[in-house]
Length: 328
Ligand SMILES: Cc1ncc(COP(=O)(O)O)c(C=O)c1O
Image (tube, rainbow, N blue to C red):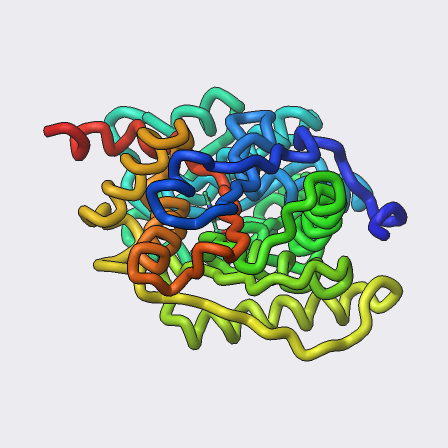
């Protein structure tokens, strides 16, 4: 369906889909499976690599020589973008909200290894970082460069296509394995991944309830942002999609004290997934989605006979920056 669009192969696809046997037993769900987008590869993996296949494809088609994007200091998106830019030989400029740390660890260390140039914005908030993109684009053009701007989380129509495509991949795996999810749990930040999944499920015919577990925003805000992105994507690709009214489900009960705060619940989800089935979650995104799944199962809100899919979106480099919070 997406063959006509510019695309740069970056990810190792299809990512594995497999059972989590030990966690399934503990939570009392017979069929609990995981989609391993933490294994998209090329720079430790994660959800952004799927989006970047189409975004970088678009940048190359437009003749760009420089990629500019934004995020937090430990942004997984920025790390995957820096890696993608290195692969295609483009310059990469990262605008990061937060102070420059004394020691670069986790994603920031990898950004530097991939050769990204970094500018810090100590007082900025991650979701406001898009505002800083326009100014720098003008400066780069003045220097004779051809820059391509990627907003926070690559949450734009061309990035959304990456997750619409992922649902066709899932559909194929459903046919191969016979496992057809009733419920899918996925972490949601900008809502870009969720938007692509909702759109892709609609066109690929995957009939599952997709639950976006918010890591930051109130449910209402995230539902609206996701709906807007679905609609903008449909409008941007009229040759591929017809207008429809998407159902968007967001659970914001696991935002906790905020984006970077690692609660005891988040730690327990990380420890459970690791100890039970050797799956590594990150504290900011995937552990909140994991915690949502665990709490719902233990509260009896998921029937034993339900087919449940945990969609892993990556983020593992960040766990090492929280080493001091475990086993102390
Ligand atoms: C590991 C991980 N999971 C989930 C997300 C959320 O993705 P989205 O911004 O598309 O909602 C991110 C975003 O950076 C992420 O790094």
